[in-house]
Length: 68
Image 1 (cartoon, rainbow, N blue to C red):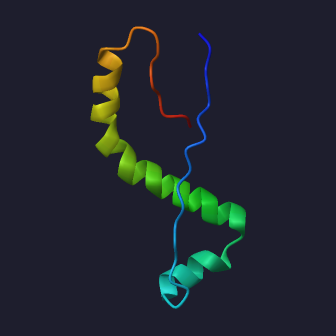
Image 2 (tube, rainbow, N blue to C red):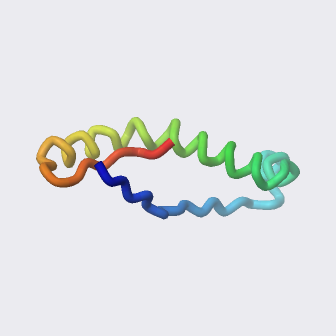
């Protein structure tokens, strides 16, 4: 089966005056991205999986998956 990698991107806006945001911004950029992506997956994925399952239940030519 052929796979197409989507490039859907999220942007996080931070209040630089907030102490938690300041701690995140003090990390190297790679660590910031890994942390934010991990949080997005843990928060959003459980909410959208039922919708993805419903879409895939009727799929005959394409199946939507969440990439790791």
